[in-house]
Structures are given as structure tokens and as C-alpha cells.
Image (cartoon, rainbow, N blue to C red; front, side, top):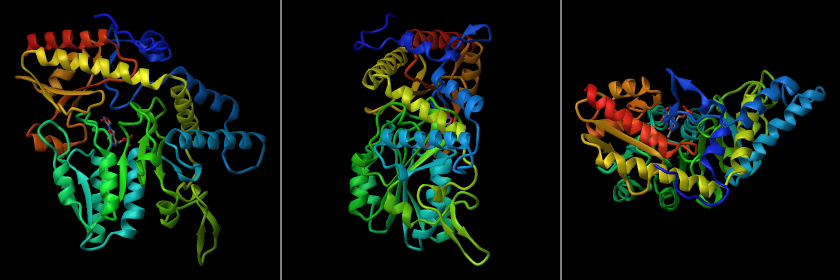
Length: 411
Ligand code: 7TS
């Protein structure tokens, strides 16, 4: 297949050259990396920023003790400003976390425990990742609130009629995934946020699978909380972001306690530091934050509309091939989708398909994708998931389907 025409300034090969790992071979075959939902690869700009930090800057932050400490603090806080600009938020509203999981736990344990009580409801959807289910279950157990779930339609879209019916003046919190990791469905978060606010609820959006595909403006969305992970946005692991509206964060109690997050400590009473430090106990992941800042700066330097158009071209091509492939059953065919193709192959367990593809150098993920209730709803144990990113090509789509042809000969 030939690459389609893209707006000037986008060339997938040039883009691939920015990612050192894409030139690797695995099992003697060129790497075909289609597991971007799990984690994306990192451009040299990110790897270099982390290396430079450890080689030339390494010091603890906010201690003001010496030259390198000041430099590390400036880089670390500069990265926070980069994230704030990326989301159209204020610097004080950006809390560093380990990732999406920790960001959601922070809100559930702090805002949730403080604001929920018997009779209150938390509304989530049937397509949430476990990390946007279990923290709410725990918060509900501890407070006497109950968890309600918006069902998912057969095509993997959200049952919006049911959402509007389930939303009531008992709903305190709505927690919803922006883009489903298992299906690729893009949820109508604008509509959800508007309705939730009318009902008096706050909304947390799990943006783990969204921010790498399209721009997110938390103010335009009017999201109350927005969470994402650095490693799914071309940045390092171990760093993520919780955005929260300043008024909400100001009113919340700390989630973890220790150094950095306090103002004054005595044995009688301690007081909290200002935002965002109130939620950042202990020495933070300084190199991670700097690496994530570098990832966003790198992404900002790209034509994001062109990247998105390319991703959609690759997804459509894959889905078109899937529709013609005997015995392939797609899982998740909603109209509005990002770069995820989940499927089953007749007569083959997803894990076996994954292993046979791996032998051909093709990396996909198989299983329940940390969405067991969603898989239960479809009556399946899991799927094979090819998840694409900006650097995947139509040749790689060919490789995937050639790989699947071979799998079919085995099963
Ligand atoms: N929410 C969604 C929608 C996700 O896709 C993931 C990770 C998380 C939350 C948790 O992110 P973490 O960085 O805190 O772990 N999803 C996947 C995946 O689909 N395959 O591996 C991890």
C-alpha cells in the first residue's frame, strides 16, 4: 500500500526517525509495535532530556540550597507550566502523580471520601478501566454511597439515554473515560459534563487514551478533574498528571502526607502548603516530570492535525481489512473512535493469536485490557487489541494482516 497524501510537513518516515526504538528488530524481524494503548514509544528528545537531567542537573527540587537545586527546580516547574499550557490550565491546577491510576485514587480518596455519604451516588460507565472503577468502589464502601454504571451499547458506544436517566440530584461524582482503551470509543464528554453540572455533580475525565490523539482544553470542556499518564503521551513511565479546578483542589484534604506538602508541622497540628504542593508529598519524580515536559514540547512542535489525520487513515485502513478478513469479529465499532482495533479470531484464543503474532515481530495486547466488566458485558474473556499511534504505517497494517493469515493457518 502506498502512503496517502498528507498536509505538507508530515512525513511518517521522518517522524519514525525521531523514535530510536522503531529501528529495532525483535525475534529477527523488524519491530511492528501495535501496543500503543499500553504505552507509547519515546522520541530521542525525551530520552535526551532525561539523560541530560541526570548527567548535568541532578539535584533535589524546592530546597533552594545551591545552584543545581535551583536549576532542577526551574526545569521541574517549567515542565509543570508546559503541562498547564498543554491543557489550558493554571500552573497551580497541575498536580504531578505517578500516572492516571494515582490521579484517580487521589480524587476518590480525598474529594470522594470528603464529599460522599449514604444516599449519594457515583456514576461511572461500563467501559471504564479498572483504575476508574475500583477507587470509586472503595470510596463508596467507606462512605455508604453507591456506584451506578452507564451501560454500553453493542457497538461499544455509551448508552447516552441511560446516562441521562441515571443522572440525578443524588449523583455527586461522574467519572468517565474520554477514550476507551479496550474499544477506542470516544465518549461525548462535553455533553456528559454539561448534564452533570446541571445535576450538581462534579466530573472526573480519565484522559489516559485521549491526550496522545487530540488536543484537550480542560477549560473549554469545563472538566472538574482530568487525569492522564506521561508514558502514553510519548513521555516516561512513573509520571502523570491530575488537573483539578483550583477551587476544588483548595477545598480538598491532602491524599498523602510527608515532606514538601506541609507549611508548618508541630506535634499538635500541621498546616498544608499551597497548591499544587499540597498534593505532592515527598521527593517527586523530577526526571519524569522533565521527560514529560520534553514529550509535550516535542509534540507541540508537530502538526497535530496532520498526525491525527494520519492515525485515522491507518485505523480506517485496518478496519477495512478487518471487515474482509474471514472469521474476524471486531469488538467496538462505534462511529467516533480513536486508534484502537479490538477483535476476535474465530476458533483461536486471543492469547494464542498474540503469541503467534509476537513470533513475527508484531506486538499487540491480548486479554481483558483491565476492563473485565466490559468484557463480561460482551460475554467474552478478552480480545486481541492492535492500538496504533502517530508513527504506525499502512505497511504495518499489511504486516498485521499477513501475520493474521499465518495465525489462521495454525488454528
Ligand atoms: N485509564 C485508561 C483509559 C487506561 O487505558 C489506562 C492504562 C489507565 C487508566 C491506567 O493508566 P496507568 O498509566 O496509571 O497505568 N491502560 C493500559 C492498557 O490499555 N494497556 O496497558 C495499560
